[in-house]
Amino acid sequence: MTVLHDRPETRRAGRLLAAAQLAGSLGDGAFLTCSVLFFTRIAGLTPAQVGFGLTLGWAAGSVAGVPLGRLADRHGTRGSAVLLALATGASILAFLFVRSPLLFVLAASLYGSCQTGLAAVRQALLADLADPERRTRIRAHLQSAGNAGLAIGAGLGGLALSADTASAYLTVFVLDAAMFVATAALLRALPALPRTSSPRTGPPKPAVLRDRPYALVTLLNAILLLRMPLLSVAIPLWIVERTAAPGWTVSALFVLNTLVVVLLQVRVAGRLTTLGSAARMVRRSGVLLLASCVAFASSALGTSPSVAFGVLVVGALVQVVGEMLQSAGSWEIGFALAPADKQGEYQGFFGSGISVARAVGPLLLSTVVVGWGLPGWLLLGAVFLAAGWAMGPAVRWAAATRPATR
Image (cartoon, rainbow, N blue to C red; front, side):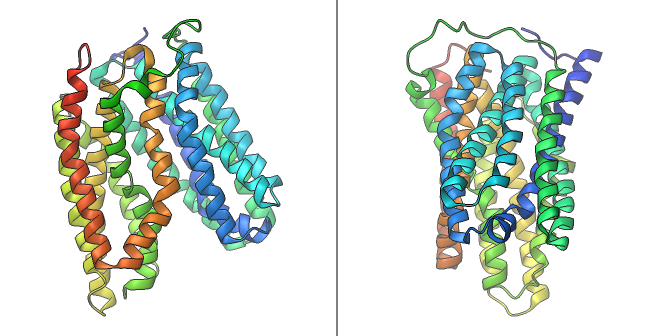
């Protein structure tokens, strides 16, 4: 296997991976900023239809990750990543022809499946290219590049929102598709990799579906990933409906989160040395996510806009530290517990937690947090704490069933 060491070709491959992450995230940032308004104002869908379609789309993605990852194991991760990047671009363009709920569900399912499959195969591609000691740190660099791309893309999407015309939204969709074509080109320039398994071998059912310890680790990670719709859906609704903070606080917290991840994610990941340290990092993330929930809940107790803003900033800072710990720890766990010849399949399963969080998180969190108020925040925080603490025993169980883990 070709692995990344500290050589010129290593640095080139790392730059290509980071550039591919930046390109795709830039397009996604623009798309996510204004896609809902395109679907409601231009495509003629209702907000409920958009929400339902996106939920089904990400649900389809959570199912598609394993078979797409398995195909990548058999036919090569680099080529599979290139094809999935191109397919993602095509799925974005398909949205432009949507004018009915049924077509929207079909397009959203294609989009969710391609996005989930691409994320899984890129993880497997990194596992194929990098030695185990460098994977998590390289993944942290990619996360920082991705967040920078999202921030830039969100700015471009904001320009389209300001124009609020069909042509402006069309430009964003075409830009997003073009960014995934660029992603495919960058991934194609990576070193060629051998297949990790033969197309004619392997059990009839994916091995990961019979790996109960890995399934438990994946479930706990999926619970912790509810922090994603917490930041993008629940907190904005909470700020607007339940606090005295100004509306622009939503944007300020998003920018704060992005900047902290860009600046510090690599440093946080650099603290990992073993699988045990990764589990401890996830456990600490659960504590911090609980603390952030308490802070967010407290932001609604007063009537002063400045006090509410200050409390929300404190909560956001605690939350982003918990986010970085959870991200770094989970990357190490997901990589280290997966068999070397089945990284695509296992990463597809492990990454399905993102799709599950995106599918069920918005409705669940908006009901529990915004609907229930303080009790909902405390319940959510307790769930984060329990999932973080349970990760240690789950990882030890999984590690005991592997031939060797570090």
